[in-house]
Image 1: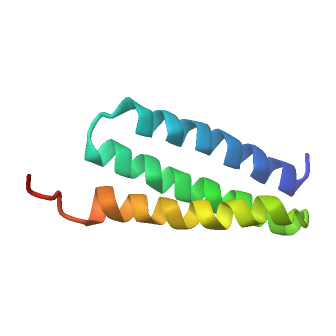
Image 2: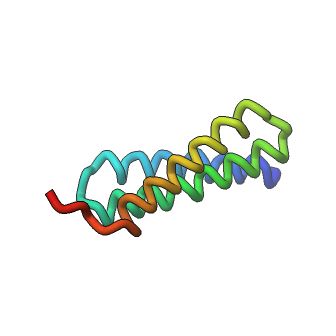
Image 3: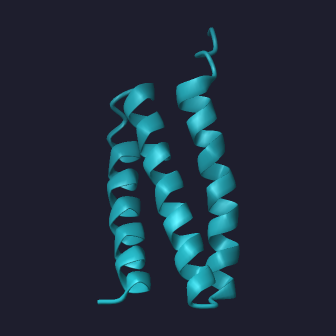
Length: 83
């Protein structure tokens, strides 16, 4: 198995686990770490897309990377809003 294929399998698996973590709704900390895992998945997809010259996959994951960074900020960095 070549590196790009391993990378894409990691990206798929980590994305599945991250989605499960976020869907569990076990609180801000678990959701935040789910977004951290989504960030790792996005980085792996971006790298795999660059290595295989897959522009649609690259474009999608650049946007998802930004969304996931916001999720990390919202759930792990920003203080919980009062209210």
